[in-house]
Length: 243
Ligand code: 6PG
Image (cartoon, rainbow, N blue to C red):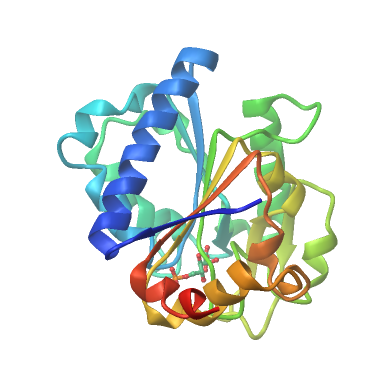
């Protein structure tokens, strides 16, 4: 069951998400000796990624024991403007002491099919080959159509049972091939954190909050990790309040 937390504005969402990131990193380090996190693309997590590079969070996070992965990426090279890896690198990874071997990116330059295979192998190496990876934290975005990561409404990828899926969706924005983790992997995570800010997200947030049938339409509503949190600002929650 998703747990909604409403904050005044983007800055408050960002601060709360940074605190959660730090808290989960400490818990994971204590319990398992490392913190595994899958990042999302899009513009919404940018303030969080940037915030993590400043005090107090920069010095509060065990960067050398944090392993970075991605929930999805576009089938482009690491320097491409569409690359989710690149976005995370310039906003976060370039500014904190993360070891290169702990940044496990989706190699989009191989093309979606080969990149999916390579990512699956990388995940098996990091998490072991038996049983789907269990991330400590997956950061999720939501599109106005209810997509999350590169799981789009009505897409065949939604029913995938493999860990990683190549995606070809001409109506995606940008319209490039992608690679995404599958629902079973997102649902195995210890924590899924959705970030949604701004009035553009208000209709989808309203439906996820109020309409049990939203699960049929919105892939984002089908993510049920051990703990599923939605951190939203008042703008994104503005229609949910009215029911
Ligand atoms: C991607 C993202 C995608 C994103 C949503 C929300 O690679 O495109 O992972 O799922 O999170 O489209 O994007 P915004 O944050 O830009 O609204």
